[in-house]
Amino acid sequence: MARLPLAAAGVLRTQRIYEAIRSQIMSGALGAGAALPSTRSLAAEWGVSRTTVTAAFEQLIAEGYIETRHGARSRVAQGLERAPREPDMPAPRPEPATLSAFGRRVERFPAPPASGPEHLVADFRYGDLAAGDFPLRAWKKAVNVALARRLPRLRYGEANGLPELREALQGYLWRARGVRCEPDQIVVVNGSQQGLDLCARLLLDRGERAVMENPGYGLARQVFLAAGADVVPVGVDGEGMRTEGLPPARLAYVTPAHQFPLGSIMSIARRRALIAWAESAGAYIVEDDYDSEYRFDVSPIPPLHAMDGGRRVLYIGTVSKTLSPALRLGYVVVPDALAVAFAKAKRLTDRHTSTLEQEALATLIQTGAYERHVRRVRRRNGERRAQLLAALSAALGNRMTVAGADAGLHVVLWLNGVPRAREGEMVQLAQQAGAGVYPITPLYADAATLPRPEVAGLVLGYATLEPSVITQGVQAIRQALDAFCDLAAAGSRS
Image (tube, rainbow, N blue to C red; front, side):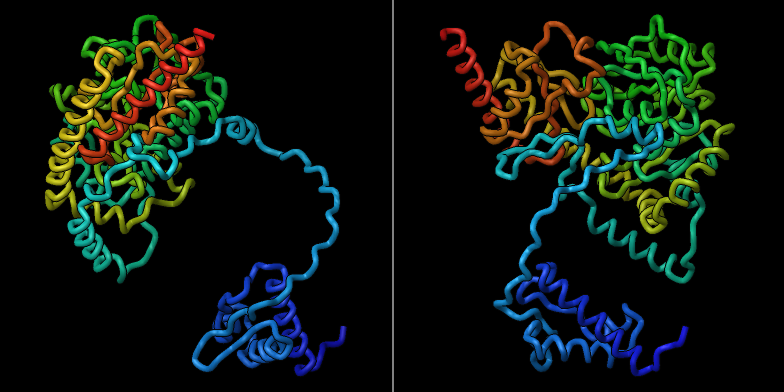
């Protein structure tokens, strides 16, 4: 095939650029007054000379599509009429998605819960932290140190995490939680959720059984279901997950330091029983220690990992509840026999967690700034907790029961007299009154496992709220409860 002369090829390139920009303008993708990229940047993007792009711009200016003035970027002309739309054609019937078995299981999961409306007086959303609690100055300093160290050697890091961070975490975990391990047993992950995903991928085959608390952390349940596991819900009471009569399984998932969401603390007797079950069943225990830094009215209890010596326990921790959930920094302490497999699986997933944030966190821990920060936010959240409990007691009295207030960053509010079946209605009334509250029912495996009597339950997080806002939010909850009772009374009379 004969090649076009250079001049002709240039004209074709100019025409294509002209048509591409004109099409975006007429379709509305570039609205009136929108600034266009410079001719220099477009030339670099399309791999042509700047002269070629300038020629296309000149044609667009001549036809009135764009306007230009000296010293300013070209913009789409005002007052252009868009091209008329072609008559609507019947949309082709979409073909069914071809997904793997994993994809089909994931597709069936419910959509993530939406956050509350913007107009709320107080949003008791669990998991968020107050921006003012973030140690901005210390973090900036640590990031600057990390940048100075990293920029001269930009390269991939170790899959299981920077050695500096793993060594810092080793010391911190021993001081703070009594966890003994070697740095090579620590795998740095993008938040505890990735840690759970690695546990599911490496420890569960399709059809194998996993037991977990009920109610429990919904994303843990979903990650095990996505792996094809048979997830067996196990009831929870004031001593944590019930361990009597546990069926044989490959894995058990627990939150023993502060059961999510009910807040109970697993007793020493049940901790021992769970470890003995794992030994006899040849199972692993995934211990999610998601908010153990926050203890108020109870003394710290040793984690399962410290009691077991790390033989059967995988210990998951995170900075999402101390620094920020946006950082996506967590860690898994794995038995020595699993360390190589976890490091290789992490490498396949995403090579490694961002090294800049890892080094900054290592600096915070090494200098003691992290533990000073933890003590500070523990005190602040203790004040928020005290305000919430006092406000609930004053506003609701015997109309409610509070659970899980001894530790963590949330409580469960059981509303006496509000049937569980009308929990959603209560949530809507609270939002209308200005309080963002979140139902507990979705955290149960199924409705048949809900506690009796079946009263509505709300999960209230308080880590983002100042004491005065907490009081206003509780007043809004009371207003909603009064409105609910009025509606219920009117319904009974009709």
